[in-house]
Image (cartoon, rainbow over all chains, first blue to last red; front, side, top):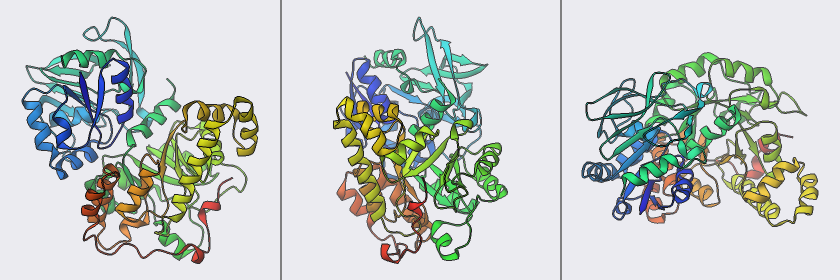
Length: 189
Length: 289
């Protein structure tokens, strides 16, 4: 099992550490050819404007989008969620991958002062409470009919799945809890 | 998890990115479009502060707000060393990160801001490990090597990054009893020296700053172990800021790919002319205690 981590900008090493801790091999993805031998890909947190521009300027965007449409399992955390969303309600600056039927609000909670963390039960993912870390986080405002809501916090959707696509507003990679990574690795089997 | 931890986390999300100095909303939009992961809002870039002289202070909050409205990426702004009221003001307008910066004229010749009293994260400059860990002890959530701002000359950035990495290796290789002596030598808390010994890195993210003017400069700092770069005067004091900014963003991602760096370095127009270190009257890097 080999999980790629898109390493253009953002919290890459953190995901790499937890993928390995969850028992899979991790691979840095920086070029289109790096996509060829992976079983799934994680789009990490970072700045979605930055990552989308690098994807578009290196022509990786089309290859990545095609692979996701063809069924490559993908998990977008925070910025990664923004990249996967078909619609953004308050932003026209991110030209993303746009494959998932969700409408996302960027920086939905405010500036860094409003960043927070919490402990939540996510039955789809784990029997135990999971620590969730929200950093200038987005949330989901609308979901298409094929989208399954996995987690809500304070009335907002913060994790969801549609077929081979998983998204979370929060950053499991900033904790030492591997439950979400194990869930994604299972999706890649 | 504490606010301090969340603030260190934001810096983790900036890694591999470029933070650009901007003086108005127009430049901020150019920076965001180029792919900056954050912008630093200030009234004058360091190169102009050098030319103008006089006291350099926190920027007008109205100007900072206009930049916050113009972009969706994090907005940082500078306060003078030790000027905790300037920091209180920036916190009140919802700035994402405060830079307690030697580029502005220091307000306190002995003390830095007690950053543990703030909810908002701080980044601070350093020339070596001791300085970095003193800032972390005061509550900084992110460190940048100082370099020499406003010179377009990368030499000091290299000196400081190499010094920091050499200091870290020294602490890593020390025995447990030597760590106490090293704490004294570096003027840093023993707990943080022990952290560096065990982890071989700073407890917070480290970016490079001060004199980066080309894609090659950015890649050089990344290869020397920086986790991202600040570019100040280097972009908007150059012939084609938008193109140079885009190239530096890609160079920071593909810093290990010489062929790509060659492509990115083509046809960028004039770089800022820059200053040789012997001709620098005031070394900003010497500010900080």
